[in-house]
Amino acid sequence: MTKDRSIGFLIGDVSRMMRREFETVLSKAGTGRTIGEARTLAFVRRFPGLRQTALAERLGVEPMTLVGYLDPLESAGLIERRPDRSDRRAKLVFLTDAASPVMTRIDGAIIAVRNRALAGFAPEDVERAYQLLETIQGNLQADACATDDAENQNSRESAA
Image 1 (tube, rainbow, N blue to C red):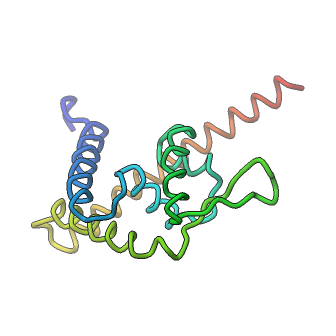
Image 2 (image 1 turned 90 degrees about the vertical axis):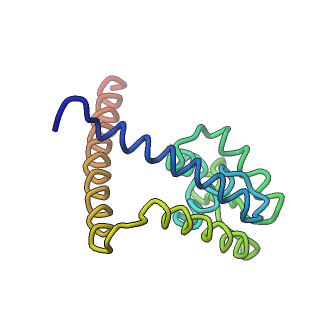
């Protein structure tokens, strides 16, 4: 690898381009949802019952930004927020049955973008790309968990 090639830059640039394409395709899909709301619905479907704070973390947005997505989704009857039994201040987020037709349109947009991005790839190359990216993701998650554990341990020690 040469020093002028950055995998982080490449992944970030591809991600930015896919988001822009998704926004374009989504606007034509007739969902009536913004890209932020559509991403939120997709994440809620993938991770049902997450606390709002954990959902914001997964989406990579601030909790107040997430509330800006959740409020109209709840008003439209597409999600519901339920109290967390272990912490009454926290809310858990779930899709409602009414979200199903909207998710079908969002899925169509996701598939269209994915098909465009992967055009010309052999199926085995697509599978290998997923495997490589999942390995990178796992490596970084392991490092993030180790860092979080160390920071929590340091906090407990300094509080004692």
